[in-house]
Image (cartoon, rainbow, N blue to C red; front, side, top):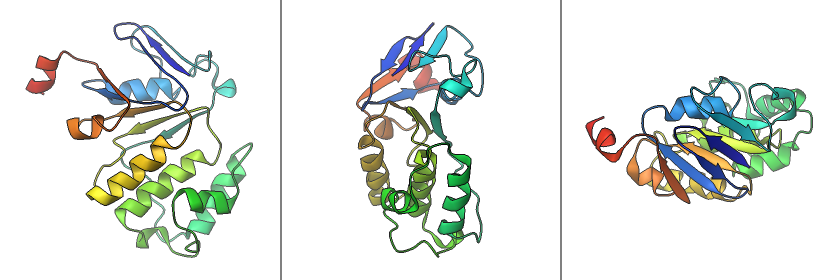
Length: 188
């Protein structure tokens, strides 16, 4: 479970996808992932502070810019990521999550934008995180690719916090948390 208290307060339960919208959404995701201290209040994941107790908290993070793996094959990338995880998913599970079965020898650079996004998401899941943060899940994707990514995100069964700048994207989440007043969002 992700718990955020302070100027804004909310909880993300297992299996729930919550979108945060407004100024500071990416900074909030960075704080939940343990990359920075929260600017205000307190954040816990599974009851632990992800910044101060990094070793005890596993939060997967997928940022808007995604992976930059060039001509490395999916198999090579998965192999490297598996070596860094303490309890990694096997290669077949990772390629199935990304819906790329049988394409392990394909270079990352040859994937479509949707395939890259699904693959980047599957890589984040290799370590079986307790929670997940995603900055702009459908950035640069066509509508069908975006639907595939959202289906995968909603199927995970872990707390997922999403930063969404596009209102249509935010509406795909189970709930929306506004970080600014609606009038501030219209002015942005």
